[in-house]
Length: 363
Image (cartoon, rainbow, N blue to C red; front, top):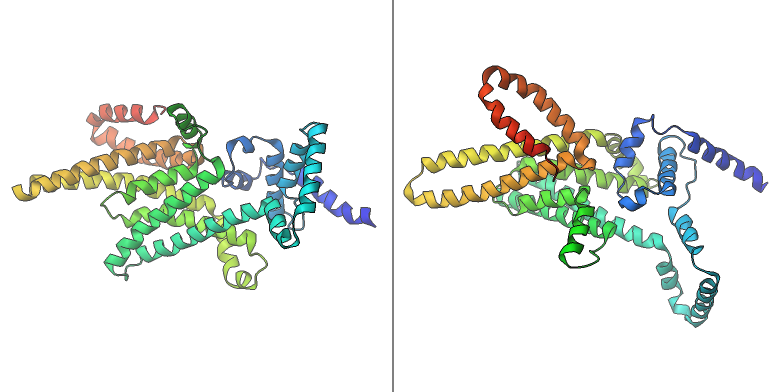
């Protein structure tokens, strides 16, 4: 009877292992949206685990996927020697005998590694849901200007805190607080999506400009994270099935569209910053002597912000997590702009080639 009950799951696992994931376009998008450290993403057992999760979500919901922590803990437990294993067993036996009855639930909670992951996911969900609500409040046209501007700043601050917490939970702290240790640490996180969003938010939090258009990537990120959490943890809830299932399914099936929208908004913001520089320079030449100094200081701050943001755009163009979306957007811009320059403004070929050399240079 037991073998007959296990046969369906065994056949489902065989079907999941034999499925051709490379030919399914959804798998590439699903794998690119999984936030795991790079050293774990290269392990075959981790890839196989998420392939089974993908197969369970899109192909066979009845497939039972075992937690990945059990396999990793069992593989790690075989590494110590026999003497250390026996010593650990004796210590665990003593600890069980010495623990009082009142501390039993706390001990089982601390021994379960999934509880820590649940806490991290809950914190991220709470912050992202709060950011989404605040960002929507900042975008609505009927909200008072003072409240809208405050919500605008808080949206970037919340996303920056969420990205920083995600970086800490994935990569931890630097091993050494010297120049070499910090350099190694930043080289490991510079291509992470959370690091890019942290710098993105930092650019606008410290700026006096209030570009509501810059909230589009923040809204897309918060919406995607909230939909993932609700779909994974509240799939059996009645309220979720009645009101939230269709929007969450739509968000998860259109993550590529949201990423393309974010990349287009990020590139458009770069051009808006350039336009703001030109507008401030124009008002400086037409302002009185009393306001000329203030306008000059404001122009200097905008130059620094614009330069930092275009450096961030260059990083987005080269980082693997955002390169595909940004490169496709820039290629469409090039196909539109280059014929116009060649026909009406050929004198711009020399500065454009200099800009392209800087753009394609490796950081």
